[in-house]
Length: 164
Image (cartoon, rainbow, N blue to C red; front, side, top):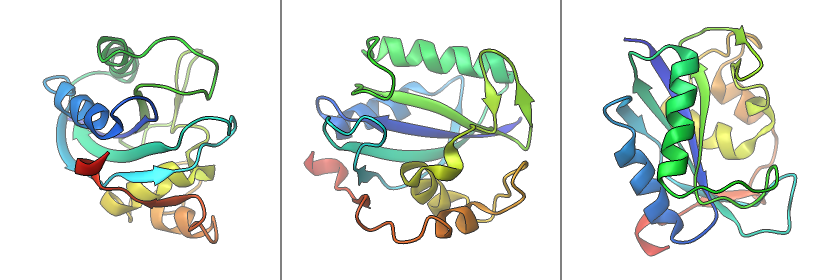
């Protein structure tokens, strides 16, 4: 089965519980093989909102890329996500980062995720579980992309999942 990498994020309500519920909701569509620790991260783009908890996971799926995206969006809704402003606060966010090493573009989905290389909140947890995975467009490992972000200590720090 194809291997996918997902990003999970939340900044509303019980953030740790939101991540736990999201991970538990992924099967049977996604079989989680590895999950990173959670990180608390300062918001990007729209900064007047609470800090996020972010993590990444590696999973297998029998779904095709667009099917996987649709299932993730349905899971977000079933977990309580409501429509909001772009980059605004959210109860849960589930993003498809990579689908194997597929390069794909449609109106609904771009793979690899087009902004992951500029996002500390994606690269730090992703590097915990896939440091040697090579970005199929940029031809650099996840660890290298993370390291190119420079000093990241002001925007991300380890979170305690049981103390949120």
